[in-house]
Length: 169
Length: 169
Image (cartoon, rainbow over all chains, first blue to last red; front, side, top):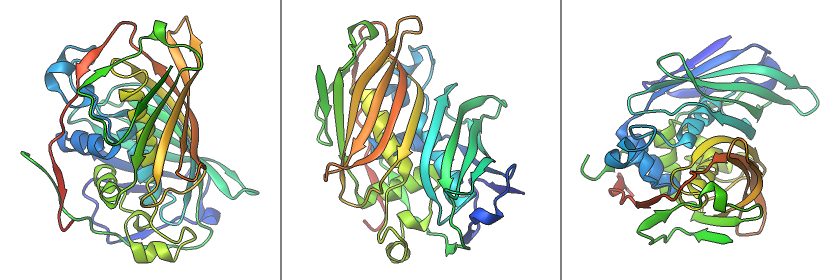
C-alpha cells in the first residue's frame, strides 16, 4: 500500500491506518516546497531568529551561500506525514531520530518517504523509516520514527486553518 | 558556564561558543510558553492540520482531553536553543534523537535544558543532552543533539522578524 499527500491537499477527511492493518513495507509520501514565508513563520513559532535562515546578505557570506531552512522545519514535515498520511489521526508519536545530511534552500521541493520497517506486537508500536529527499534525488534528512498507531478506525474532518499574513509580504 | 534565553529575549547580538571554549558540563536553557497562535502557525508551516492540535471539541473526546502541541514544536524549541543560545550562530546541526514522553498543552511553559555531554576532537563535534521540562518539573521530551560548533568567534546582529497575524485572532 502506498499513500500520498502534497501541498495541494484537498481531502476533507483524514482516515487512519489502524495498527492491525499496517504491514511491513507499507509506504507513504508527503510533499512540501520551502517558501520565504515558511522561513519567517518557523522563526516566529520556534523563536529561532538565527540570520542563517533569515538574512540574505549574512547567509551569502557563509559556507551555505544562501539562506537555509531550519533543520527542524524538515523535521516538522516528517511529523506532518505521520500525523495526516500514515498512520494518520489517533496515533501517538513516541520517538524520532534525525540525521541532517544536506541543507534545504528556498524553492526546494521535499518529499518525505515513510516506510514501515518493524511492528512490535507486544507494544503495538511501529518503527517507520522517515527519509526526506529533495528535487535532485538527494537525501536531506535520514531517520526513523516510533509510532503507536490507533488500534481502531479513526475518521475526522480536516481542520481549516485561518489565514496567516506576514507584514510586508 | 550556564547560558539562558527566554521568550522576552531582548539581546540585539548573538554570540557563539566556539568548539574549543565549549566544556563538558556546560549548560544552557531556553524558555517558551505554548499559545494558541503557536498551534496555528505550526500547523500552517508544517501542513499538519490534525485536529488533535486544532479542534477543541475533537481533542476533548480523546485520551488527551484537550488540544496538544505538535511534538515537533517542542523539537523546534531544542533547535532554537542550539541555534541562538549554545553553541549559537555558525554551528552545524547534524543530528537529533527525541523521545516524546508527555503531551504539551496550551499555557504550558517549557524549558529546554542543554548540557554538553561529549566532545569528539577528531570530528570537532559535540553531543548535547537536550531535555525539555514543563512547569511541573516533568520531562516532556528527552533526547540528544549532535552539533558541529563554529571553530572561531561568530557575532551577528539578531534579525527582527516582521509581524505575523492570524485572521480572527
